[in-house]
Image (cartoon, rainbow, N blue to C red):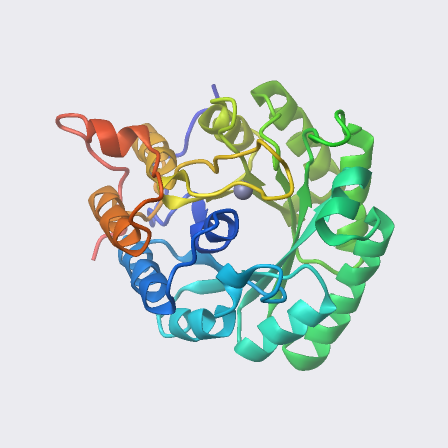
Length: 320
Ligand code: ZN
């Protein structure tokens, strides 16, 4: 196992946990959370130390009524100092609305599977790369400081198409960077990934696009979510997507449920001595806020069930 740097001079967070529950989680369940409950949940996540949150997705309300209040949710998130407010946009129209709302970072899903791309955004992969290019041009005009991530979806396999060629994934990551995205990460949209594949593919992508390699977005569909995150960490990935209580999956990848549980991911890294900047007790307390807003939705997570081990010490923090 790679030696983990636990004694960085300033003890700043070593990994960035990017919470995706308010977007990925909410858009894959049928219940609609009120704007006020979403805002309370965001505040609780922020208070636990999370500093990047995907707060909404800018899509037509007719398609995803759960996201109809995206602009209001962004407005609340922007009041939390130091938070990177992210939103998913599938196209230029969504990007326009997200930029008008004032987000700091856009994430655009680009499917490596030709079949998933058509099902998810009704565009070919090549058309999506052109969409990324158009979104980059728009943000350069309206809000040049905004960052753009193009996440390669179905990077490890697809429920519609089956195998996805690794060459396709690497080529697509290079294409979106060439089109002007600031970073490109890999998403296991369908929960097909295994740790050896995760390491191999992230290393190949890094060899191609270097430090523009973005987040690992893993799913726990087959119980390998954390193992895949650790594999990505060993392949130098330092940003990880996860959702509180494991809420969500993908509505267009049938049977693929279960984002990695933020609580378990934070526990894994903190127990290893890898600072996440997140306070586990406050994070676990945030579940109550989520539950209050979505009373009948099942929440997952082993760490919240079992509690923290006796004598548990989090990774070293910045001295205040
Ligand atoms: Zn997901």
